Image (tube, rainbow, N blue to C red; front, top):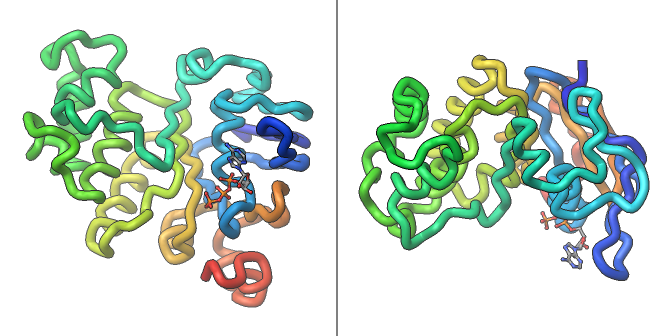
Length: 239
Ligand SMILES: Nc1ncnc2c1ncn2[C@@H]1O[C@H](COP(=O)(O)OP(=O)(O)OP(=O)(O)O)[C@@H](O)[C@H]1O
């Protein structure tokens, strides 16, 4: 079953026609990688799914429910979490305050689901280590972990992250891969935009490649990973 489905989605940003009929499926319980050259339309696709831009044509459905015209808070309330490329962290607030703001049900740290918090600390030790420190003091990798930790502070059915591996050192990338694998094992469906093909190959079950505002290839990651000619023709200099 597909948790998320985009059919013929067009998005305009002001006078610019950015997405030209995107068809994309995100199978339930799997990790889907959205790849493509700079400017292909990956981030715009994520923003359109989240209702931050609205499709001018086509359909976006979550678990069969039409969310094409839904507002972002409604989409979030359906259990979709989104980490934008700039991560959306409040640099002046502590890690704890950042987590509290993301936990809509909790007003104080004691009201956060303790077992869930322990699970998050295990996946992202930096979140626990720097709990009372300003988030702005964290390294790039630690900020990325905090951003994902915020997104999953409450149970989610779909986690969407724009370029989780961007600027991360290899050891941190390994940690990130383990965390996404753990989330998948807990039943979270994951959609990631990636530029790092190696990261994408290690984690992805399925792949969709965009070019010029369209999905130009979709299939299993295993097949894509084995086809270097296809990778070269679709991603070119990006690999
Ligand atoms: N706010 C905006 N106003 C005008 N054009 C935009 C805006 N946001 C994106 N675009 C344009 O839309 C196209 C797709 O951008 P998008 O960010 O979706 O690509 P991307 O595949 O995520 O690439 P990147 O990896 O560079 O972020 C690009 O040509 C970009 O310049």
